[in-house]
Length: 501
Image 1: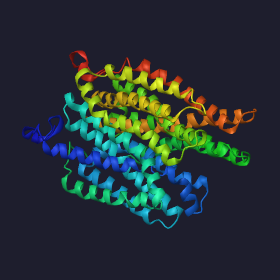
Image 2: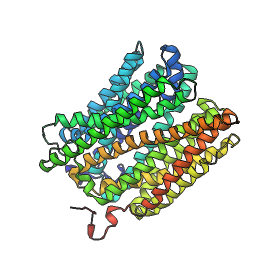
Image 3: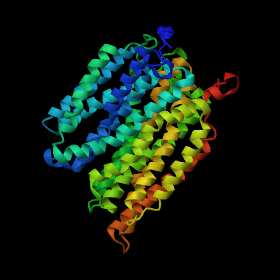
Image 4: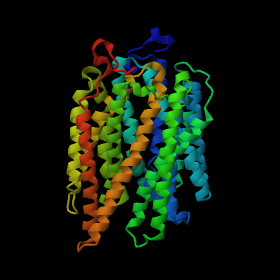
């Protein structure tokens, strides 16, 4: 807590926070919601952009890939940035970048400028979630963190799900530019309010930035995420007849990207281990000295993998197999996202009172059960059953993500909160890219094989979807085992934080 702890107002401020601290957290949550909304808002707009900007599907896909790639490059650096810059400076910098990118996108005369705008947007977005989680861990006392992290679930689950739904509504009545035009004034208002009301949390320290670490981080995380995204991107074209030279080029690009990424990551890790001895690492890896943090990150990786993989394959199933429209697709997945978001505060309260296992164990079972159900989808599965499955999956993930966020960061020393927050966000990005790559690759391979036999294209697509979800369901069984090992730090005897020194 900060210096004005003695001015607590438990009536107006949640979780026993002062009015000032509560205001800072709510402003950060609002800003994070706005910026994360834009991470998925482009997906539905790709066909419109291809026509309006006269670009190919591959070029249009880069508007999403570039956003994800920039996030993967910038997020690992935020641990250092939040150590060096104050809360207010980080907020203004992040929201200013996002607002500038949104304005540029709204006024973009062509594809190249729009692509640059997405990169600028992503640079600001990458700062906001680590900043939000670091601020919560710094200000909120341990006994109330679950409730506050539960509210963060609204940001990380509802915003990405509303993105496609919102863009579908906008595209039916307005041009694609208004996806940015509507968000821009909201972002500017958040920037102005935040510039006035966001106060500094914690202490900053002046440390020299290691340029080589930045380069290795960009090559490492960027190379891995780009390589994985190439797998997913290639699938969209795999169903056509052109698979020759383009396929070979894509395969070469994929392996080169992954190879560069893995080598650079190994060098990056080695350099951080060396630099952290003098507290000068770009991303301090001593966060993994906490056994509880490490287990929670493994659990979060698998859950995020299945979550993002499902979010990618399910719309393909709904549109290509069941024949529903993009707008209807958004509305079908919306109830699950709303359940996931709005149960977050209740789940946080349960965590604060009873700990992790009462949530994560049943949550992982629910998520796995939903994926096993999805592995049975056919071309005659009723839409209402898909909605129910999505609600069950979302509830299971909500029961898992909130305790994992809180227990993992709560297992760290205060000085490592910013690095831990950066690791959490990085794990989500890399897991998301991995999940999309695995699900799409399996779906594509099985669909192509089924099309060579004597069945309809729709039946072949359904077979591919079932195979993708089957792989996800098998992988999800790991989370049921891992759920028994994640603990709430306050539950440990004698205050043991499970650090391996």
